[in-house]
Amino acid sequence: MGANVSQLEREIGSDLFPPNEHYFGLVNFGNTCYSNSVLQALYFCKPFREKVLEYKAKNKRPKETLLSCLADLFYSIATQKKKVGSIAPKKFITRLRKEKEEFDNYMQQDAHEFLNFLINHINEIILAERNAGPSNGNGNANPKFHTGGAATSAMASSTASKSSSTSNSNSNSNSSTNSNGNSSNSTGSLNATTSVLDASGSLTATTTPIIGSGGSGTGTGIGIGTGTNGANSEPTWVHEIFQGILTSETRCLNCETVSSKDENFFDLQVDVDQNTSITHCLRCFSNTETLCSDNKFKCDNCCSYQEAQKRMRVKKLPMILALHLKRFKYMEQFNRHIKVSHRVVFPLELRLFNTSDDAVNPDRLYDLTAVVIHCGSGPNRGHYISIVKSHGLWLLFDDDMVDKIEASTIEDFYGLTSDIHKSSETGYILFYQSRDCA
Ligand SMILES: [Zn+2]
Image 1 (cartoon, rainbow, N blue to C red):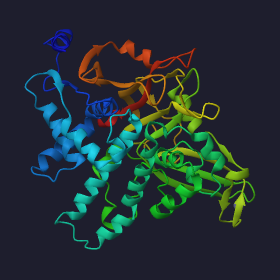
Image 2 (image 1 turned 180 degrees about the vertical axis):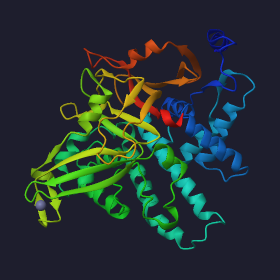
Image 3 (image 1 turned 180 degrees about the horizontal axis):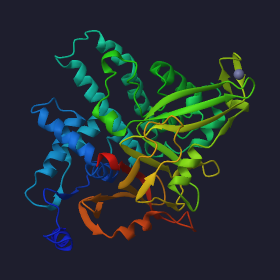
């Protein structure tokens, strides 16, 4: 490792080494690469790092939470004397294992599930601390808050992670089984709601109370229903960074009434097709879908379940666009999740084409900032690494190892064009940062 460390500095060159930047690997505590890879990606999402460090500066003696541990870790990296090296995120992992039973073991976990949990959990901590704060005059906000969005989200994430690393891929069954008429779930491509569905194995039973208790049109599980909770309606910095809005338009095929509904999201989950691009995946995400047979739509105008056409488009583009490629598919014939290593190109620059007509900032241009990569052949085995862009350099973080890579190496992580069941190193979560916030 020592050799690698100095080699990295040599490779970058002391003249070119970005001032005030630190490239530190993270020690693995027994299959914690799912956490290390996501933490590195987040560390190099500039607005996120800044807010976490700001939190650290503002909270000198905080009660220990996962956020305070994350802030300590980021602060520790950012204030290292050396430019490169490795650091042990021991406190963070210990706290994570305390916080969430499902992570309290040495098994491989799903990096996306971890990201989902982390983002939601941090957001809840910020909201809870805001509510507990002395400046908050709304005395009734607490109970309301706990039965509202946050409770919903906690429920979503706790149920979601029960299925460990495999829960977020099972979209086909969603759309076919969802007969509760709740249009927000029927695309089967959204976030924690989807995970909840998959985890429980019982779609309607799990979805209905979650959507019902949220009550805010935020059917997308990873997004928290902040809009309805009085004192909490003010967005947190987590919302400001990651939250976008999807709008779903549903046209009843009986009466032709179009109804639309907005949902918050913290990331978008897209299906992967062979030899395509992320733009293709996003287009498919927004393809018109017909709701029929078991999946009919409850039309308020007709007061009954009807066939309908539905499409989801992005109405508000987030500052950081996190895209989850659904590479773990449940295959009935194998009775387990199989990795789909299809080749999906993700460009360095991205524009969204699946925006709604009333989108606020439809032309936002995104730059690829970080990619969490899954290496291996299945969801329960394998390894996670990440590549990040920092000051024009591309770096690969593999637990405690850090290497400089050429931008051209990124295409090695697009996937396989043949032998797709072979072990592969493929982009799994993409982080795109809006250029207007750079
Ligand atoms: Zn109708």
